[in-house]
Image (cartoon, rainbow, N blue to C red; front, top):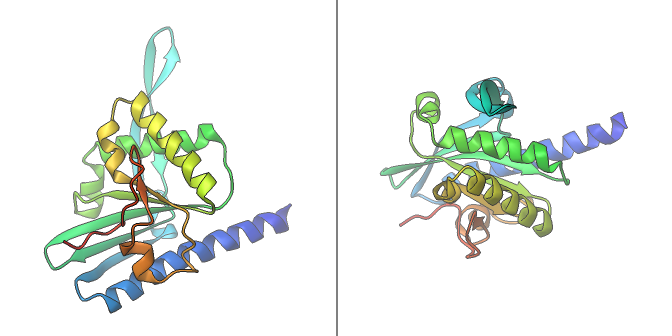
Length: 196
């Protein structure tokens, strides 16, 4: 089991690295895109904390501290005019609905708060969810939509993007600039980065 877990961990790490390499290559090949900063998983660990309300019964709620730990983040400047900031989440295998929804609930609270701007000095925020299969991407997109509907925050759907494109198998341009992504509450394929 430990060996399998190590292989999973290694595959996950390689996939996240492929995404970051693609971001670097993209900024080298497309003059309009500057990679201002990238954050590795270890830099994001225990950095983002949110106070979330939790129902404890009898109609009462308590506040619980939740820690958000993205797999990585990239901060681009487009045409020297605006920023695009992505928290990256990589999912290679199926996962528990409750745990994933809890994470998306935390992301929604984060997106609705001032914490992101305080920590990363930009209002720009997108959560880019990379999935190992189109089936998994569809499931995680649906779960995210359910979380946003329950929280009455459907407008935050535009911040959540899902793809099943393998970062190692496509060019950086295809990964970031081609319409291979879907936003929450939309079925139209869209690029992650739009240059105009």
